[in-house]
Image (cartoon, rainbow, N blue to C red; front, side):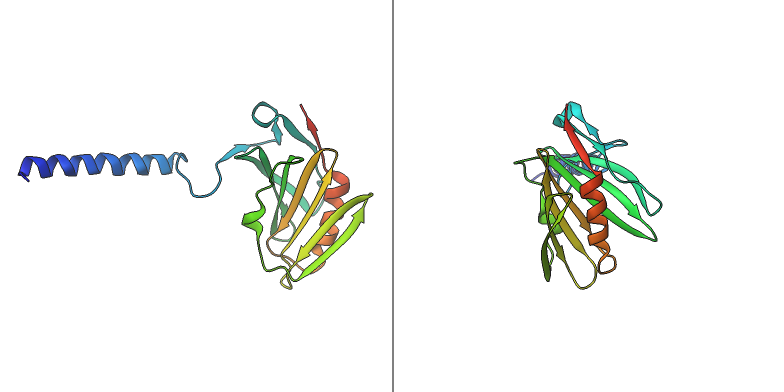
Length: 167
């Protein structure tokens, strides 16, 4: 190979590397699901629904939402003193993409809040997942860490205080 060929190959490699870096920085190439940020949980244009109601109180603050690939909404909340939790919502029959929340849950419990069947899964360290279906929508509430029993109390608030609607 000539020097000119090597220089051309290096230039081509540099262009490809720059394109990849640019794509990563711009969010076009990401590991994990594609995400689009929404300041309010209205996904009407892209997914055909909105999360019209969700609980807010002294210990629970809404911080933002994303629309994941496949029409799955993800709302993020801050729980006092310093915990986070995520609520995933999708039209019934669509996958909530719960593989990211797969843990070694040790406690499984089925309870009924407001007449809705809720499945609670928890670890001894306080991480937990609550899932339910209501009015044509599937929900999953994920708490990556917390205190034992915290998920139960939060699940009641979210099951009773969350409503979604087709647009």
